[in-house]
Amino acid sequence: MSVNMMAPGPQDELQGEIVGSSAAFATALAQIRRVAASEAPVLIEGETGCGKELAARAVHYWGVRSNGPFVPVNCGALPDHLLEAELFGHERGAFTDAKLARRGLVAEAHGGTLFLDEVDALSTKAQITLLRFLQDQRYRPLGSSRELSSNARLVAATNQPLADATQQGRFRCDLMYRLKILHIELPPLRERTGDAEQLAQHFVAQLCAKYRLPLRRFDPSTLAWIRDHAWPGNVRELENWVHREVLMADGLTIHAALDPTTFEHSTVDACGIDNFRRAKAVAVRQFERDYLLAVMRQTSGNVTRAALIAGKERRAFGKLIKKHGIDRRALGDS
Picture 1 (cartoon, one colour):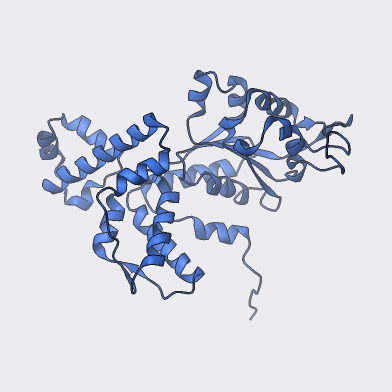
Picture 2 (cartoon, helix red, strand yellow; picture 1 turned 90 degrees about the vertical axis):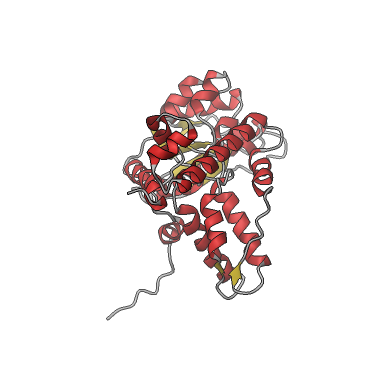
């Protein structure tokens, strides 16, 4: 009888981070697995904090390139004057302070995956540079006359539909088409019915192990609040909230003090105080979900009665329920 003493690899660690059992999440996972079986470019779209990098890592580690490198790049942090050098490398003396030759990220990702996060933040010049590489995956390091090639798979991500950016003239259509050969759309946490509680308890276990604390648990009223809250900042907001509650809890049970203004503050934190349109959209979604839950509970999950109370046609009311991922069976509808 043999025992495998090997340390867990990236695939094992990744599997431990994928938490959720909702229908919306299961659909996204199935989509990720289908995409992972290919090697074409992928565009991942989803709101801030919903797990785009985790999805990109799953595409890499569940695919044929799992033994190759996974190289993440934050496009929003790459200024134009450093972009080519960072992506494609440079020769010694190619620019001021280039005292040594250096391989770029494209070369580092050879045989693996290059993940471009916040790809919509690239300037027009940077988009042209990237488009040129995508045409045949050939490039020249800065200051070099040699043309090199890389077979890195490209996975890009954005927190807004890239089609909107092209319509606004901020992103090139031809580049979008090259990036969006395969497409993954991640659902926000508010549409993943039941997953918020699972994730919250998963984060509690992780954090208690990290800080060497006895395992803490949420009291039922706090779990109910976690389930019903819209979480405009998605999984990232939930994780940060759980982090704080674990560290501030007295005893083994977490009784969160739920301030009525919690949502107001989290909306501003998640969306940015300068982004009125997005903050308003989040507030409207939260109102819709809260109202739907209240009227559905009042009618024990009876959609017809709830629609009458709301003054809406039953079919339109049913679409709202589906939009917000509300499980009417859990509210008593037979």
